[in-house]
Amino acid sequence: MPDSTAYVPHAPYINAVADALDAAGLTVADWNADDNDPRDAYIEFDRAITAPAYGAETEVSLLWTEEKGWMVGWGDEDSVPQNGLDWVIDLFTGVLPTPDEMVAEAREVVTKIPRPQGGPYGRYRDSGDDDDFEPQLAQYSGKDR
Image 1 (cartoon, rainbow, N blue to C red):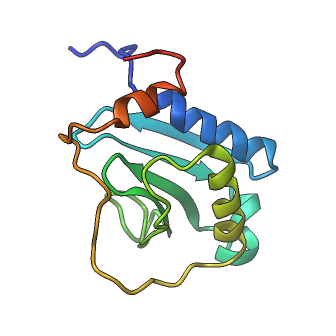
Image 2: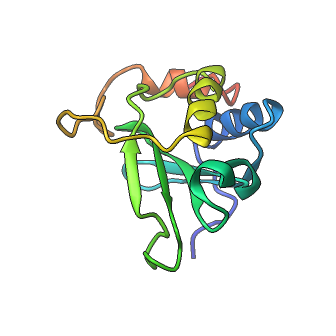
């Protein structure tokens, strides 16, 4: 049985973004960071924040992967049982924008449904890349790798 308290390296970064959103008045209902391969996470907004643009029944979340960076997803959980999201749009922010940069992105996302942007599916990095991603990620936890 896996240890439910195991360290998830990107959790401090996701938490920092969630805290910045809350501090900016963009209330976070929930967030989670999973140690999958590639690592991923989500931050779900409180529906009171997103209801004017998306409707009261629609879940709106920021989604993150270590390869693609940030996306926005929304939908009615009854319509798509596996994850509750009908739409997912890439935000093209890079993999580790600062929490303040994500607040600026989120202000747009919560007030206006984004339109799909043309362009090929892409990613910024691969989970197996030997790059400086881990030290950049570690700065949010205060741990040096």
